[in-house]
Image (cartoon, rainbow, N blue to C red):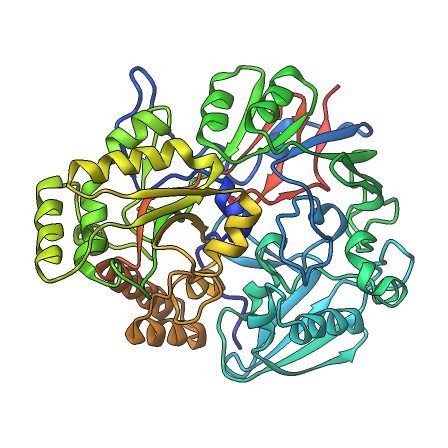
Length: 536
């Protein structure tokens, strides 16, 4: 019998607007600003709930988001931090690196990972009063199978058949054994999850409008959504966890401007902000009136090469870029002197990281960069290129431009608003060199999306058949030790290929006022609201 696999919880590849907004951090810490310690994890999974005392009941939590919600439909990709108020997850990732049942009660395989059975909790109801049961799970998973654009479609497509064995048991049969299948039901909403279930009655009632009329079985029920203003939720008095939620309600406000968002938490206009930038994290850590929840995780921020066209179809030019960029100077000019440098897919604390991957990564060496560039030029190549990014990264682009000039390359810069950049530039492969953030919440499907040939997040068209083989094997294996070795090899090979130019880990954090207690979150920032309470 195969139980739920124990594995390191990583961060799934981010895409779209949120990916572009986030400034990140990395495996090796650059020099700290004078008198300040290096950035490190601070309560990455939330607070110490037992030490905070008896929760108070009542109050409305005000939360500032980095962007407006697009949809509450789990088959539509968007950075919706409010979704976990409405939907509980069938499975949850644990701080110890495992996956455990949550709204589900059990999940296991007795035939080596091909057939899986999920047991559900009894007595759970959706907000519309209908029963949460096995049929509801089947209906929702089928939506991901039928919707090619769903961020969870690839994982759902592994299922060849499924059925409700009884009202509280679902059986899934896969095309091949898959040791990480349970993880697909634990991923964050923003990354594409099979674990968040919509009421089938609501799906029948609202149809295509379900994204604006969410009905789940989570701790809060949807009240109203006023675009570009607020989204309001009220306590679910029929919640399956007795005594929760503690709050009367939640109100989410879109605050896309970084300075305004931070000012809102500093002034007490909101109780919580979902922060994306280094400067918010650094300021929050220095403010005695605020609490910070942060973990740099794995993946992070990188420069993306386009392998489908010159000059970055050539390894010499990819290496030259990395050797040209002084990360210490970058940290001083762009990251408040507190850049957490990244030089590999996985961070130093990850079981998937090896010292060999670190040793293989090119070091800052502008003289060697000049040699590589001249060698490329002598062989008939043109090393000049256009660097494309968003309007929010002008200073970063100017830094890169200056670093390239220092090694003899003249580059042009192009800037786009986030929406246009995401769709027309990054996801369309319409660039030579660009910026992106790839947080990895779980090895599968996160690493496959980023590095496999044709991966949904592989916008640079990187391709290595051996990496593809290792990733396919990692999905199939049911042995944790074997899976770890496979991802270590993927890290090493993709690093040697210079599939992307890592330079920083993620700074995605949650910042709260001191009176906010009961914080429960994933390291990548997903917040769970049932346990949250206000001490005021």
